[in-house]
Every structure is written in C-alpha cells, then in structure tokens.
Length: 108
Image (cartoon, rainbow, N blue to C red; front, side):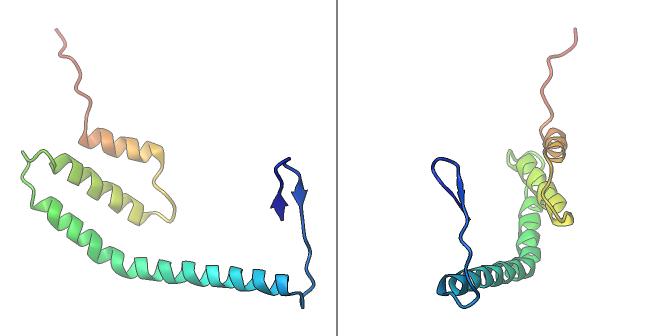
C-alpha cells in the first residue's frame, strides 16, 4: 500500500509466486527477526548497565550538583523497567517534581 502525494492510496496485490510478494515477505520476516534479536540483546544487557548507573549514582555525595539528576535518572529507568510500555508524562512529571521541586518564593 502506498500513500501518494495527493493523499490517495494505491494498493498492489501480488500472487504468491510473484517476486514482489516474496521480496516483501523476506523483508517482513527479516525485520521481525532483527527486532527479536535486539530485544533479546537488550534484555540481557540492561540489568548490568542499570546496575552500573545505580552504582555511579550511589557514589555521589548528597551535596554533589549531579546527585538529583542521577537520582531522577535511576528512578525513571527503574519505572520504565517495571513497565511493559512507556513511562507516561504524568509519571515523568511526578518523578521530576520529586527530585527537582519548584523553588517557591517565601511566604511573608
């Protein structure tokens, strides 16, 4: 299926023995294999990479300017790791507000 410049749609049908059909099938199967391989790689590498991030964050002192950034990053990564999908904007906002609270003017 192709969307043309004038926003019309052109659809091409191939018979099973057509070279175009075979090429599309090979492309789709190869793409699916690549996604599966990348997912398996990430699942294997992620725990170690995240552990290194946590260790680096733990090595920071509380007065280090990077400490809130590292803490927020760790919490965001942990939240993402617990999800099947993405961290939502409200979740991001709550985490960032927790680590970077607004500086409100003093009440007089």
